[in-house]
Image (cartoon, rainbow, N blue to C red; front, side):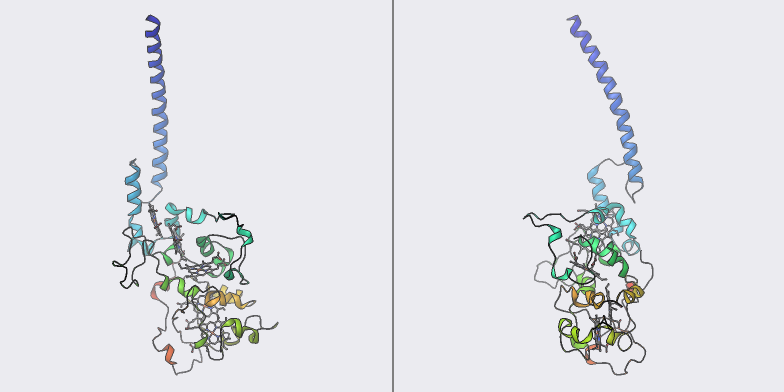
Length: 290
Ligand code: HEC
Ligand code: HEC
Ligand code: HEC
Ligand code: HEC
Ligand code: HEC
């Protein structure tokens, strides 16, 4: 009896000591968590309710207009760093090694390095950084947790961009449309056929036969492209130009590019160009990228 009692007291003391330790450790942990969340935008430092925190982040004003228009990549990456860190599987579920597979669009001269994710191919590969200057908000005009989809599904889907708020017509299509040879006087077929007659050792980039001085020489003056670097890179291969103008086309249509006036431009506007704007979209003119 006596022994049992003293054991109980001892274990009570032990429990007390452990609780003190837990409290201290817990305090330290809470301090760490609040220090971490203090560095995030709009997260409540004292909030320990994970669900509440998640919902607040999900509905964070940065996902919506007008904040989204001013957001920097760094601000988005504070919560979405996985976008940059994630890598493709080394081996597919069926056992195919990533390094052994090459898709048709990866055979352009400019394709380099290991297989990589979609986001990294647009934001961090050396080629992407050389020719482009894409921001998260170039593609994502926010995140709409309400899942923007037409109801019923038969309706015009044009203005719906799903939850990720990416409109392919105003993003992807600009660099992944079909090569529009029909509007190019002097070309009678797709680039794969025309190219051989245009290119030789002295003229490695056949596009320049017409685009160095004669047609549409005012181009790429937008904040998401590195105009000078594109011309520099294109000196050695038409794949630089073709890459964004048909070489990786996910669509059967072409983007209706603005038609900037160029020096010595003929006064007559061809029929196909009558509806074209003559300046790039306003959104891409301010030079605040990155
Ligand atoms: C405070 C943290 C936070 C910031 C800052 C933030 N997001 Fe988010 N975002 C979230 C959370 C949480 C979700 C919901 C994730 C989910 O449900 O998978 C989300 C969802 C998204 C989604 C949809 C993901 C999906 O799978 O449908 C996109 C796209 C997105 N954010 C883009 C952005 C962009 C672009 C920025 C910068 C302008 C940004 N976010 C800034 C926390 C943040
Ligand atoms: C070139 C256009 C483009 C750019 C630039 C871009 N995204 Fe995305 N993002 C997409 C598309 C398209 C998807 C949908 C991909 C899918 O469903 O597989 C996506 C998906 C996402 C998702 C959902 C999770 C996922 O991996 O599917 C998040 C979060 C996200 N993007 C955040 C960002 C952030 C943050 C940046 C800037 C660092 C960024 N994106 C830059 C087009 C882009
Ligand atoms: C401003 C031009 C531009 C825009 C806009 C753009 N891309 Fe790309 N895309 C590129 C370039 C350049 C590459 C090649 C990158 C490289 O070789 O590293 C590429 C590569 C790709 C690849 C191949 C990746 C690989 O592993 O080879 C896919 C798929 C892709 N883009 C899809 C999209 C989608 C979907 C969108 C719209 C959400 C989009 N792109 C918007 C320029 C663009
Ligand atoms: C034989 C001459 C010729 C060659 C070679 C040529 N183009 Fe063109 N391109 C033209 C002409 C002509 C136009 C239309 C000019 C105008 O707006 O009146 C044009 C227009 C374009 C346009 C704008 C299309 C639009 O709808 O606004 C793009 C983009 C383009 N060319 C890219 C290229 C690329 C990339 C190459 C090489 C892969 C190339 N061109 C090779 C003659 C050529
Ligand atoms: C990284 C992708 C990319 C590369 C590389 C690229 N372009 Fe473009 N190009 C675009 C985009 C996007 C536009 C539309 C820009 C805008 O809205 O003003 C465009 C516009 C054009 C136009 C229409 C010009 C006008 O009147 O505004 C021509 C012509 C053109 N490109 C030719 C070329 C040629 C020639 C090369 C190689 C020297 C080349 N492009 C390389 C993405 C690219």
